[in-house]
Amino acid sequence: MALPAAAQSREPTALVDQQHCMFCHTSDAPFLAPSFRQIAERYRGKPEAAAMLEQKLRVGGRAHWGDIAMPLPAERGGPLTADDAHVLVQWVLSQ
Ligand code: HEC
Image 1 (cartoon, rainbow, N blue to C red):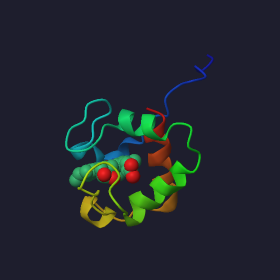
Image 2 (cartoon, protein in one colour; image 1 turned 135 degrees about the vertical axis):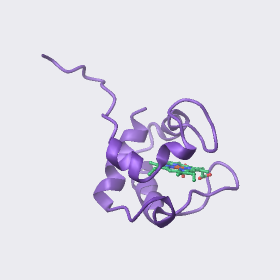
Image 3 (tube, rainbow, N blue to C red; image 1 turned 60 degrees about the vertical axis):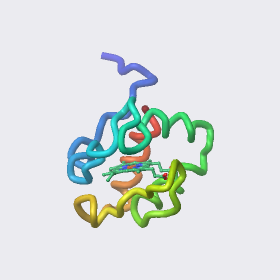
């Protein structure tokens, strides 16, 4: 069976649960944080954004949406490897 070419990246569910991403984000409605769809819109067509976001997920950084920065991995459920950050960012940007 052929896979649809533009399929959304599959949700890395274990990682998303472990890091509690959905505690603050939803995929399509802004809640405590911008929705993943808003984030994907904002960075679409910006190839350098993925590396910046991976870095930000791992070590934090300046807030880009408001005054509240995202909590660090240690406060979200545990350390995040570079590979895991990559998987998460690719998934967010595919929404
Ligand atoms: C405790 C709440 C909370 C949790 C948990 C959380 N986030 Fe966030 N996230 C935020 C807030 C608040 C912002 C907006 C920060 C800003 O202004 O840059 C944000 C922003 C982001 C951004 C955009 C950053 C930017 O610079 O534009 C990405 C990507 C993101 N989150 C992904 C994730 C992923 C993936 C997870 C799970 C690993 C996660 N978030 C877990 C609250 C949260």
